[in-house]
Image (cartoon, rainbow, N blue to C red; front, top):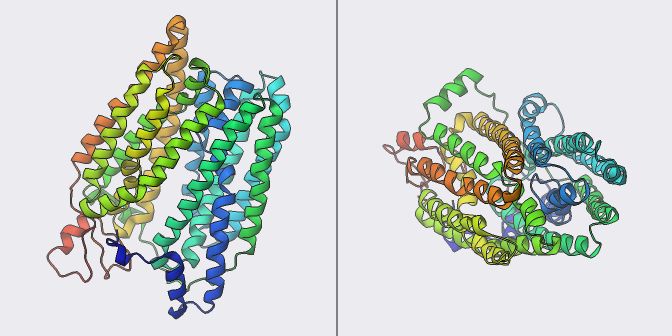
Length: 473
């Protein structure tokens, strides 16, 4: 991490400074591409929010219109996570063989067509409950596959034309716009669906609005023509050698275990919080979305503070503080009833204040413990294992909720309360893994390339020799 405000130039200043870079022949094209992609971050966010595995739109759709059971909801939540595993063979097959921009446009266009087809079929699905589960599962698989292809192409394309010194500033500006768009869309979504009485036409209108903005997003992506950087093509190490490097790396297996444990804890019953709010607490869609918007808004405000704390103290201890305080607040879910559901607004403020430190630190922590010589394989392996775990956890959670509702139909609120204990209890295991990681800060070195993070094992091997520009985060 870069520390100190003086070392953090604004995105526009850094782009302007890129005029002197010898590898960029037409810096004006780079500046135009930056502007277009920032606009794209804002207008593409609605369809991104709708495609998330756990979101209010799908929760309302499954509960109010399609009337799916707990097991079916668990399977629907598992499908997007399972489709993320597709990124591994896609990376292996298309790396260096297909245009990354073409992959992005192809995947996003396929996902757009799947959404339009679903909106057209929605009245039929609502009128035919017997066919709704498997047709909805096919549709979710289609949009998830399209999103996986677009995601692989998008990140590959960014690395082709965004200079490495600009990546952090670029993603910071883009993420702020995306969060503002998410805040506005989530709030408007709940208010609009509540006003329309959760009618089928209301759900269709939301999808059409998101698709219209996605068309504009695709047009912007098509117009982007940045000057690509000349890249040095490096031949990857053999697979066996990379696996050997990963096995020898201290901390890598532990970080993967942390990601898997957290994925299971957050996904086993994560999709049923919205179901519980709608079915058991009888909250309106507006109330559910306003609570989510409060959490997003507070999180956006405090996120820079968590970044500064991690700059000073490293990742481990701030992540532990964030995790314990956040999960302690989530115990409130075990006492929520239709009489006191307004406590969820206060819980949304608390979650927004406390959750950012842990969630923001997950990816940098992974990057820190992945060896540079096997970084792609390490990240892909972690993502595949975590996605598989999330898929299995979602199905298991749906089966447990269904079993509890059949066993204790008169005490269904209590069944949910017991299930909501899992995530805070599982966080103790996540904290145990975090405590076993070294507390040292990430080392940055110019010898490994600008902005490169060394893993824990590589830090041990470099401590006995001078490192130019090495600095504790």
